[in-house]
Image (cartoon, helix red, strand yellow):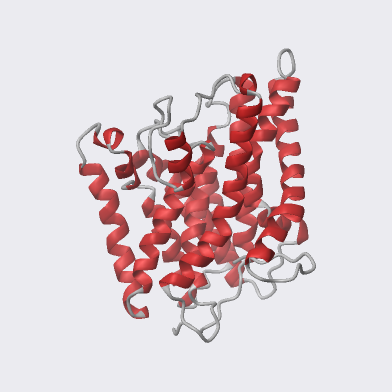
Length: 353
């Protein structure tokens, strides 16, 4: 398949983006409302679904560039435009809010200039409190995303027929190197934390995209069965320990792979697959939801905390997070992307890729 071959956007992938983001929101809202990460542990797997989706979309993106092949420079430019501006916006919003009213953030250690700069550069590091999170805590996943983009850009330097071989060898090798590192070394050199089993989840998405290239159509019944198996595996999976990412790869990563593969299999097997405008819109707003929800969850939990039912607080925080994200997507994210890409603001439309 040449670089100019067109692969249509997948609505199932867009829907799963929204599902993954909502899972993360409920996980954080329930954890905050109940004071325990155990109340909705399955929601943490939304991140793993995101990573599998990212691998799928990045491989697909190099096939949808029209007549010109995707170069490492153009690929990274598009990724930076897509990821960085909104992340910076919410990072600076958090920083300014802390500077204006530090008492509203009792669990937040005073950020240092180095902490802020390393966070903006997507460089893993220990924050002033000694934890391995950027200033905007959910940005830890973007550190992995950016690292994956760099590895993927390396693959774009090769002829199209050799790219998959490089990624299929390099991503597991980097994960294995992380396993072989001496205990505690990653904490002394946080950049090494990127050598992590989670990288294999990106490869899982690439594998699914390769199946689609080959004309993979497993049938709707099998697709739904695989998707259901992945969902059931998540529901009954124990919560992996915080530093057990190989366990997480098995307990969350494998089900995430099955969910994405099953959803794509259903769509490739259908003659007229339509997800509907509401799920597609939620998927389109998933990045805004992922970055903004911590602000909304915090406000709602503080406003409704105390004697309120924790699950009602969780539901309220989730619903308001979604509404806020839709507004941010429509009035902030989309105009910002259009300006950076040199486009006039179009009528609202949703694309999977």
